[in-house]
Image (cartoon, rainbow, N blue to C red; front, side, top):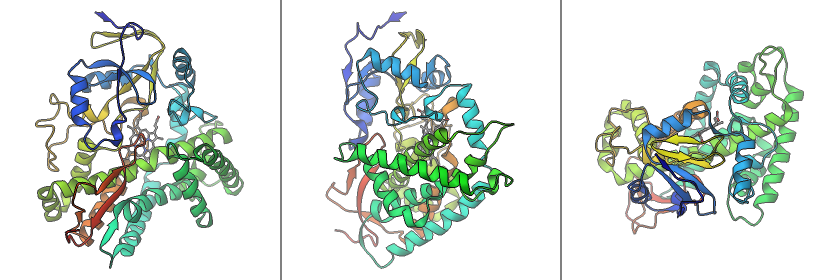
Length: 419
Ligand code: HEM
């Protein structure tokens, strides 16, 4: 067995992969050095990166590989780092949420939150997505040279999260500003906007609490946040602090990710015109096409950090207690042991389950909503603009440079006229 203490091993410094034009060769080069490797992130966090699909599933199910706030703090302290400078937005928010707890605390939160995502709620969200996408597409009609992010993917992602949280129409402009600024690393007023956003969410939670009729079951409440406020398991309910923390998590986990999934789909369907024509000819391929986008270049390339509670052996490497661990989901989704010809974008491929939405107890809570939004957006967009093309010259896309693989600009011609 190969006992690699983090102190004995020189960590390989890695770039911000999500901002790279094509990070996949970098992932492959790192994976060639072993499936479990010590790396140092571009913001200076040392961690064990996992590059193998089987080991990824093993780690994500292992209770010794923790997401608890205490385990994260221990690992941060060992490296003399602060949560905010290490780029862990959720760790610096007060109150428990799904991504800073382990079972059984996590199980309790997830059960309470699940009550808000019933089949009835999904139907309601489906109607809202259909209406919203139709409106956004209508606004694009008659235009030609557009930015698909500000004109299409961003309004869809943000408005749906506003719908989920039940942000009143009058507040949406300000909410959008605060959400955008607090998620833009390096923005001069990032910390101030995050503080104001949390304050706004606290006010929103209080207003929902005040307005809910406790006799109305969660899935008949007007929005998910009201539903979460009304959720009850025996006499257990979510506290106000937990609700604020959960709302913030829903916003940061569900907004830019969805924007990224839809944007990455439009980019891939431009780079692979044959696949676009195939999808237009057979709309029943849509669910598979969205799964293939998520596998081939999903918006979440790496999991959030975890930390080992004790020494954990993974694929022959011992990860000592108190170290950060992170799975390279995007690389694992191209594992040739799982996918034939993994570097080929093929919307008709028989889909083995992929890791784009994670695995284990922290599997994405919003995957159904994200897929619903992406399927609706792509269907309606291709119906309206089947010939769209990205601008030429290789500078059509600007990657956001955040922890999400999402473009902040996609320049395109809706009619397909060369620029
Ligand atoms: C394409 C869009 C999305 C992708 C690719 C995605 C991906 C992921 C991944 C990989 C995780 C696991 C993180 C980890 O284990 O470290 C996760 C967790 C989570 N996601 Fe998503 N997500 C997306 C959209 C959404 C949406 C729309 C929502 C909310 C409405 C959402 C809410 C959450 C929450 C709450 C968690 C934490 C679950 C838990 O810890 O139990 N996500 N997501």
